[in-house]
Length: 111
Length: 115
Image (cartoon, rainbow over all chains, first blue to last red; front, side, top):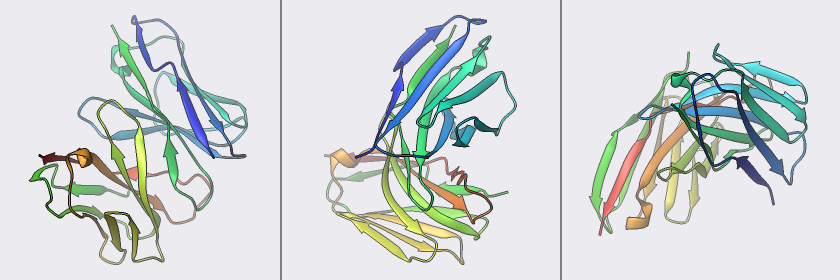
């Protein structure tokens, strides 16, 4: 069966520090991968998606970036965090014509 | 641009009651619709997926219907239990225009089932 992992589960970082969140999927090949952010009291915002290794599409201009170095690995990064980057970050995967499945999330607090 | 609305934003019911959650979307050209459950501080759990050609899907006490032409979906929960308390989200996927299948989410309905 397929599983999706995210780490770390929680993170507290100072403003201006770098960020690296990792997502890995097991049990499938060539998935579409997604990064979402859920801010307090707000809905899910799609940040990036990827249909293959090295293929990244950005939905929202910001100081975040994403990379897909391997088929089942998706990384969300920032060189300098802002206060507004605080939120709950969710990774998800899907195959064509199938449901989208989410990871457990990473709670990021920027102080 | 697709917009998804969920009403009500919050709902509180006594245990054992049957209930309906509503989801509406503005663009009927969808590929599928998915219902999720989110517990506080957790990721989303997929409940039901309805393809655009389908009318409904059932899983246990859950039944989701889809009326694509009117831009509506409902999630019916039978015999509600306190463990059903969570936020329920619906999301639609656009008709094929690529392989990315980005979802557009509603803002959710926060359900509380009182014992």
